[in-house]
Length: 327
Image (tube, rainbow, N blue to C red; front, top):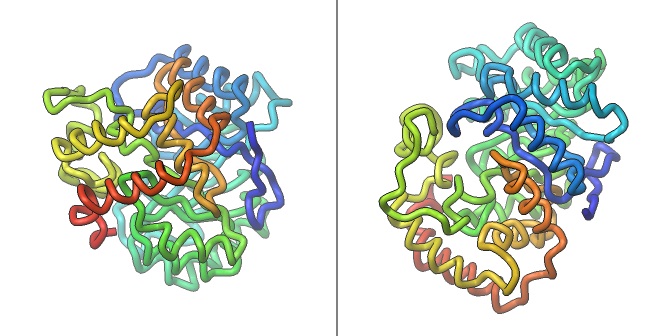
């Protein structure tokens, strides 16, 4: 597994990491033993980067990772968590006292003294331009509660505001063949500033796997049911904001671009890894088979220029009008 330098952190992480929202909640039930097996399978396949959040299963995802880290202390895993969504999404809740309380809880869940990386979890837009918020984050570093901080964002404007802050180590943003806008300004700006880019929602909530039809039904406790139109959180987190039926049709076309021996999902991950400036992509996995297949995408040959052009053409024809202006 290729390891890439994580910008200002001076650490290396695997180009394919593991997102662990699925192991906490909102994707249907995943048993504890199954979750630990997913973590172990990813590590055995070369993954050294886990991404989680304090609200995934109300801390369940962090706790499972903490159990795994205790069992594998020499695995060299870099863990990024997120904070900020334990209270109503008001800018005034982003205070140093709350940051201390939230990071203390995450440290306990993960069983570590210092968090490798804590990210603001898609806060209100005004937070990204608040000097007081970033001063508070600097204080967390000075107090050694966290080694570094970053942001997880919904929009490109939010990402650019965060990149302009000298202490920002990373930006996590939705990037996949159905969400190309970050390639225009955000990724180049991060690259110039030495800020890591973590690509999330890489398979557009599974659309890019090519496994769904217009008749697919998801469980009631799956965000692909209850947040399809942004009912609970930003719509972009579910199917990258693409309408489900339109997305299924576009995914069929994307699947036709997969090279021999690669699945559509692996092709999407390989496409992301190839984008200059991307540090790591964090697909989720609910089974060991998914975790292994995701990691294997890092070893695929680079996609040829014709395939890259075809992705851009597909986006322009089918996706751009739906999502480009919103994020």
